[in-house]
Every structure is written in structure tokens, then in C-alpha cells.
Image (cartoon, rainbow, N blue to C red):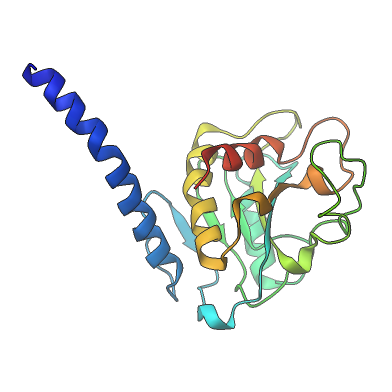
Length: 207
């Protein structure tokens, strides 16, 4: 075997170990309090993490998209941090991938429409109907689909989401099949499927 092939083979063998180490690091960080540095994320802490034992018992993640222009995540997150239980979410993601943690995780923002979808259009709504709601679900809002609501997330948002969803799941012990798009559980704007691409990616990425 020549040196190039040997190096390639070694790289392939190392990939699972590297991925496993990264997962362990994220899991350790996810149990922290305060404002930890999270590798790969540009995090703006408007509210620090409290003690994990005192966090609200979150069971699901709901992916939202807001009809706001680029730059609107910061404004939404600032307004949310001043009035945590207003209609909105705990975590906001800007088009450049910046993540704003707006609300302490012991508080419950108002989001979702009561899990009123029951037509099984996207997923089986038997387990979600009237059950995946704002008071048991972490809401993550992705900004930037204005003026074209069909515009998908940016590459920077997708890159941030790949890490963020693992952190959220690790921190709150949320299974992969409890990551939902807003349109999967509620009847939303018929012009586009809100959050669907991002929720689908999260499930495809797996553990």
C-alpha cells in the first residue's frame, strides 16, 4: 500500500473516533451552567443557562421560521429576553448562523398553536395531536425568509443547526424523533412548509 492510500485508510478509521469525541464534548458542555463556549457555534447569551436540574422538563423541539428579514433574529431575541413569556421562542438563529439564547430554560415562552394538526400530512399526528405544545417544547426560530417565504435556510443556519440540535437534545434528553417542524404539528401558512427542511435534516443527520 502506498503512503497516500495508507493515509486515506487511517483517516477513514479515525472518523468514527473523532465524531464520538465531539459528541462526548457536546454532551459534557450541554450539562453546564452559565454561558459556555460551544465549539462551532457563535452564541450570544442574552440569558445564561441555569442549573440543569432546575430547567423546565422539555420533551420536544419545534423548528420555526419567522417572516423577518436578515438581521431580525437579534431584534426578536432581545424583545423575548425582556418579556420571556411573550409569543416567541427560547432560541433564535440569524441568517449568518449566530445563535441568540434569549430566555432562561426554566421559563416557558408562548409558541405553537396547540398541536392542532391531525391530518397526518407530514408525519403520524397520533402522538403529536394536542400533545407537542409550547409548554413542553423548546422553540427554535430561524430568521430570514422575507419577502419570499419559500426561501430555505442559509448554509450558515444549517451549519449552526447541525451543532445546536445536538446540544439541545443532549441537554434535555430529547430523542431524535421528537424534533418537529412547526408545520408538522400545526396548520400553518399553506405557501410553504415552516421548519420542514431543518427538522428533516436533523432526523437525517441522526445521532
